[in-house]
Length: 240
Image (cartoon, rainbow, N blue to C red; front, side):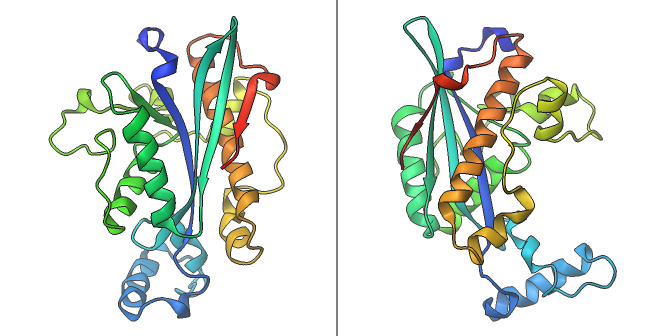
């Protein structure tokens, strides 16, 4: 089935999210109450809502997107290339407007697909939810209302690996390891993004990390198709 898909029609993506505020006490009072309720089910070892607020970015109701990195495969002069671009901004609405504009311009035709790792559970609904919160009209490729499951234009490398096993979760890092996909050693991981954003204020560093995940995602998808990996020299980054 994957062999029938045209690689040029797939937009590979990854998002990075953080809590809406640097500290719990800065939250709007209404949201504080709801986070306290949420924290009750999340806490271990009697942690307080304040202590686990650094995890709020996982949830679209309490977090925001600070970076969306995307990649597109092209074939140029007999070479397969991956072109990367990141949308990152402190203003989530500005970021999403730019990303949606790109989707509407380049990925609004039949047979276009979005691909992410655990995208169906996280990336795609998170983007859609934050788009609505920011008062934006969703691009058709993200608006699933009224669409049947087989009409959903989304690929998920985690779901593809599950083969129907709903209990199983495998990280992108583990899959790149077992498929022998080279990945650069990062100075940060996903658990550090909130700190790097709010304390170090280094959004560019987060974008670089996000781009590396898109490269890993794309290479994994090629492995699923038993195709050669894209050479490092053919991975091209377009500045924001």
